[in-house]
Image (cartoon, one colour):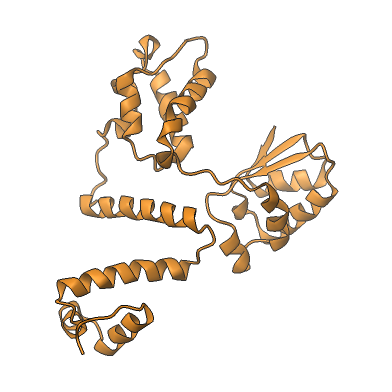
Length: 246
């Protein structure tokens, strides 16, 4: 299988015979002219050729905003497969770990000890499946790993020992993790949800909670939080939020 992620690789594909299988990672990063050219190339490709494209962001909003080729999108759309993030399918983790260890074993029958598997299952996996493979590759280099991968063979961030970056706020980190999970859920339910709709959902939740903290009185909320009263009342109306204040 040939792979390509940069413009030069893609240009070569467009001017040469397509291989049996071609993997294009993060296809949303291609320039507009290459997207259009690839769409035309797909039309002329032989039936034996197979093109696999990946994207970590939903493509339809990009199409709607003119940032991604509609022609290429509709040629790829019939074979679309949505894979949940690793943290949302932890039941697959043992099988994935076994597969990666099979690739990495290099003559050694690496295996995960139960304690290591539990540590992997409690990690949030911001780097998704790629992070899992890298973590296992790290573990395989440990001097003790030949006897079975244990917790101490895993990277520090998996063991929960990674030092926080200077100036980071644990509360902010916790909020970011919650937001990431919320986004995953919303985009899984509605992959084509627009940014403005996501922003409205967030602001609606924020304003409802702030109103509750200020006795459901917009005037008090505006005064204590430095908001313009008229602007706040208009925004509450737009978001369909009612208050007890007349």
